[in-house]
Image (spheres, one colour):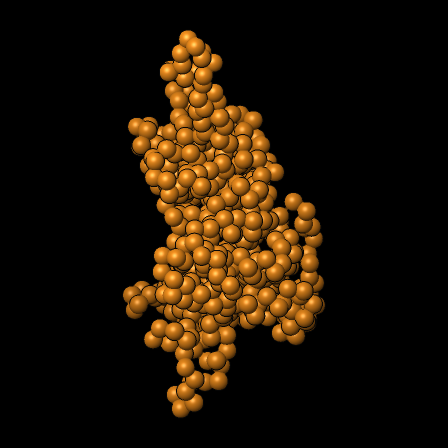
Length: 510
């Protein structure tokens, strides 16, 4: 990975912890204009009990800070809404209202692509997001559905090769999908191999350890399925090296890129991954539960013709033959069949070459419209520029978290410290019992992050819309929350008059 490990900031400089320092970094940011492309909720919006934005009411008694934007550091869970999403969705609704079924086919001035072609219209930009050829990607279905569709095609167990390797703390969908694939083939669950950390105190998985587990089970493994970025720890795996190693042992390699796409630069074609799947609602900002995407390497998406002798050939014409298609077996649907013959309804499946041949039904035009809006924002820059900002932004967050005015902080960062081994997210492990109170204060103060019980908060400054001032504001709120919770816990400790030690009092019970 090309990112240096030395500190980017001098945390001993007294100015480092100031708002002015953060604001100065934002002034130097060449991508700062992209923040204006997003709708950022205000504190009042978050507290509003009715749907939609809070309305300004000078007689409501709200303090002046209620109109302040929140500190949104949760793009690893759900990205913010691009401003153009509502514009694009309105075009979709207006087309449906005014054209009905003709919206599938008609090219409209200043409109969106016809629904029949909307999946093809975003192929090029989608391919750029994951480092693929346009024919290797398609926007379709949802993450887990795509994983199942891909495993139905790529997981082909034999007597000798039947195991599936995943990581020990895989996201539940991945774990369930792998288990159900084994069950579908009547294979015992012992065939699911888990790569777990070597140290119980840390979720870190070294590349060497990952490779050693793969080697250990290589001869009996049919499929390796790993996340590009681990959802809990935020660790960015060495996709290229792991793929190359597993494939050298004859293992098919797939990647879940839910936390990687839109977060870090990817080069799936060059890395030679067999397949990959992702969602479009985290760093991709497509909206909750929106349509996902998948990648199939071009070598796995080939559709070839082979000539076979025709059984009806005669002695007069013994050379007569007919063509037969060969392609990777998959669970097929009509939208994956030859587009020019799609409405012929002759029930002859002729798969579209590449990833599009894995499509099932026509995709939701509404979902595709929302994804298009986000991709158009990404098209205003490139992943390398976003990554450069992200490295700086996350390093600033890390350095600020580590600088705790009250001595040893009541938390530690469990995400790798090397920039090349992480994306935007830092996972912060709190001391036991602090999570609920800290999260309550963060919510009250308008700092949006998410939690992974029992004790982790995940903080993800997304470079498209987060700023250094956002990071500064978050750290101030978070560390103040920690101090309040620590003080509250300390106040509940009273001296034991008989033993001279402290007794912890919780809820009035010692």
